[in-house]
Amino acid sequence: MTASRSTALITGASSGIGAVYADRLAARGYDLLLVARREERLHELAARLQQTYGVEVKTLRADLTQESDIQTVEATLRDTPAISLLVNNAGTAQMGSFLASNAQTHQDIITLNITALTRLTLAALTRFNAQDRGAIINIASVLALHARDTSALYSGTKGYVLNFTRGLQAEFAGTGVRLQAVLPAATATEIWEVSGVSVDHLPAGSVMKTEDLVDAALAGFDAGEAITIPPLHDEALWQRYEEARLAVFSAVGTGIPAPRYVR
Image (cartoon, rainbow, N blue to C red; front, top):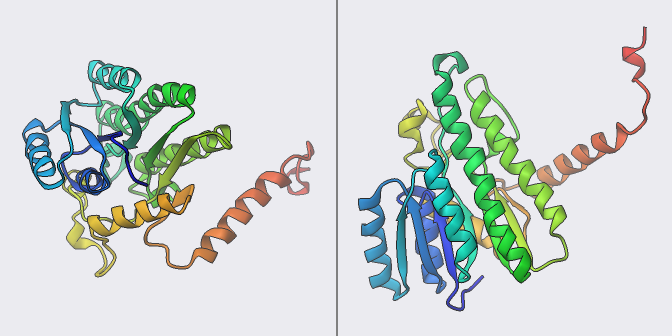
């Protein structure tokens, strides 16, 4: 994946995964539009990337839990023909008892992880579809595949991101539009500071460096993967998971209750 003066819009770009995507895409020749809440960090990153790679880097301060800011980024995606890549990276987590947080906190997580991602994807795809060209990278999580007693909401939102991306991949198959879902496991980012779980409490050796995560995700993109799980070494496990998932789905088209439910 290389750019010919195309622009990549990256959300959550002020640190962590988003900032590394910005660095790697700038190195590939993309101009950048960096979106995040922390304007000072965005400006510092933009100045460094412009000096290092000689690309054009613009910034847009936006809090994607706020309706007006979502609308601003939507309009930017619709009205900027140079944007050919959207990295939906912005997201947050709060690990802990579901009852320990209030409704507004839960709603903010849903708005950021689901609503904003969905609407920005729609804005981008409307133009990408018309041009038959463009790509979207959605950052999900391995917790899209599993839920713990502390991850009900986060797992739920990332499960949405995965299945949302799957559906769009099927819808746009055979076109010039590409979508990739990336499923990180534990990664060394600032999300741990707000999640309620200290990264220091995770098993030794289980946390991936952010740079390694993004490099692996981009290698997966270059290889044409629809779903990329950077820390999964045994690819056969994923193949068996997919086979079982599809087998279950195929087996339910009987229209007849299973015998164990018949009294």
